[in-house]
Amino acid sequence: MNENLKKIEELLDFNFKMDAYQRGYRWDTAQVYSLLTDIYEFTPQFQSFYCLQPLVVRKINDNTYELIDGQQRATTISLILMFFKSKSYQLLYTTRNTDDDGVNAFISGIPQLSFPDFIFQKEIDNFDIIDSLISQHWKEEIIINKPEINNVDNFYFYKNYAVVQNWFNKLDEEDIEMFKRKLLTNTKVIWYVEKEDSNDKKIIEKFINFNEGKIELEQAELIKALFVLDIAKTPNAVQRQYEENQFADDWNLIEHQMGDHKFWQFITSNKNDENIANKINLLFQLHNGFGKSEDKFYNYRKFENSFKNSEEENKPNWSKITQLYNGLEEWFFDRTSYHLIGAIIHLTSFNISTVLEKAQESSTKVKFRNELRKLLGNEFLTEKFNLELIKYNDITVFKMLFLFNIALTEIDDTETFFPFYRFYETKNWNIEHILAKNDDGLDTIEEFKSFHREIDSLIKASTDEDITLENKNIIKVLLDELLQLISESKKVGIKKKTKEINDKVAEFFSVDDFNNLCLLDQSTNIKVGKKPFRRKRNIILRLDDEIEIKPDTYIPIGTEYVFSKKSTKSESYQIDYWSLTDRESYLKFVQNTISKFLTPEQDERN
Image (cartoon, rainbow, N blue to C red; front, side):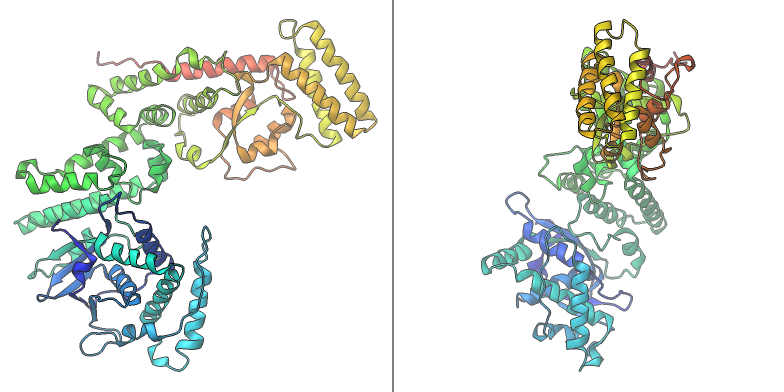
C-alpha cells in the first residue's frame, strides 16, 4: 500500500489530539452533504479509491497523534462512524468543554438527543432552510434545560450529526451497508507525519493549507504534498526555508492566476475543465500527459514514482512547472499571441498542447506566431469557409463570426483583449438576421409603418443587378396593399400581408447569406429579433427609449460595427435599413479583417 495513504479503517485505533491553536469545528451543512454524497456516488469499479484531503499529524506515542491539519474532515467522519454505531478513532481536545482526559462528553451523547426531520431536495439549495430548522430545534428542545452545553462547538457537532442522520434516512439498509464499506475500505486520506522533534508548525500551515470546503481531493493537491515532502528532506535549514518560501509563493501565484476565469478561458475551451477543483492540475497534465480520462490520479502516480525511483538529479523539478506557467502567462499578456492562441483553442480541434509544441519548434516569437496563423489558415482559408458561399444554417457561420470578432478586436481595437471568458459565459449564441427573415416580432401599427418604410427604402435603393424589375414590382404592389391596410388599421390583414412581403424579400434578397448575419446572445436576440433595422440598431446601441439591454450584456464588437455601419462608406451611409450596399461592404470588411489577422508577420531577424 502507498505509504502516504491510509484507509479510514486503518485510523480506528488511533487517538487524535487537537491542540489549543486549532480553530473550532465549523463545517457547514453543504460541506457535510457533499462529503456524504461524494462517497455514496463513488464507484470502486472505476476508481481504486476515493481520496480525501490530508491529515497532517505529529506522533505522540504508538496510538496517539497530534492532529495538526485535518480536524474538520476527521471530526465529520467521526460523526458518520458514530451514526453507524461503529468503532471510531478518539478525538481529544486540550480546550473546549473537555474532561481531564480530553474527551468531549457532549459528543458521545449526541445520538441520544432529539433531532428535527427534514429532506434534502434535489437540484434545490435548501441548506439555509435546514440550518434554520436545526438551529430552532437546538434552542427550543436541546439547550432550554441545559444552558451549560450551549456553545458554538457543541452546536456544530449537533447540527452536522443531524445532517448525517437525516441524509441516511433516505437510504435502505443495503445502501447504508454499502456506504459503510466504501467509507472504511475505499476511502483514503493522505497521511503526513511531521518529525517528532519538529516544532515548526508554519511548514505545515504554509504548504498543506488545502481549502476546507473542497471534498474530493484533486490530484494537483496530492502532487503539492509530494513536493512539500521532498523539500522537507533538504538538510540545510537555510536552503530548506528558502525553498519552502519560494514554493509557497509560486504555488499561490499560479493557483490564483489559473483560477482567474479570464486566464482559464484563454487556455481551454473544454467546459468540463471548468469543474476541475484546482485548475493548476492542467499544468501537471501538460507536463506529464493526460492519461486515460477515467484515471483521476494518473499524474499523481507519475510524480510519486519519479520521486521514489529517480536519482536526485532526475527527480521532478518544480522549476519546469513554473517555466511552463510563465510561458502561458507571457502569451496571455501579449495581445497578438493571446488572440491567435485563443482562436485556436476555441475554434479548432487543437488544444494548448499543440500550441506548446509549436512554441518549442519555433526559434523566434514571430515564427511562433506565424505557425499559429498557419494552423488557423489551414482551417479557415478554405472553400468550406468561403464567406460568399456559406449560409445561415451552415455550422461554419458561427465559427466565422467568432473569428471575425477576435480578428476585429486585434486589428481595430488596439487597447482591448478579446473577452473569451464572456463568450464562454454567454450560454446561448444566436445567428441574427440583420434584415429580419420574418415578422413575428412586429405588433404595433407604428412597427408595421417602420417595416413598410424599411422595405420601401430597400426596394427604391436596389439596382437592376440587385433584383429584377419583375420582382421589384411584385414587392411594390404588396407594399401598396400593406399601406392601405395600415391606414384602415386592419391588424389581421396587416400581419398576413407583412408575412407575404417578408417571404418575397427573403426569396429575392437571399437573407440567409453571410452578409446578412451577425452574432447576438439569445436574450438580446429575443428583444430585437424580427424588428425593423432602425429599431434593432437603437436597441443594440442602447439608444431605445422602451427596450433596454442589461448593462452587463456582452454585445460582440462585430455586431456593434454592423449596426453602427462602420464598414459602409460615408456616401452610402443611412440608418433606416440594411441595404445591399451595406451588405457588400460588410462582407468585404469581414474578409479583409480575417485576412489581415492571418497574414504572416515579417521576421526582422531573417
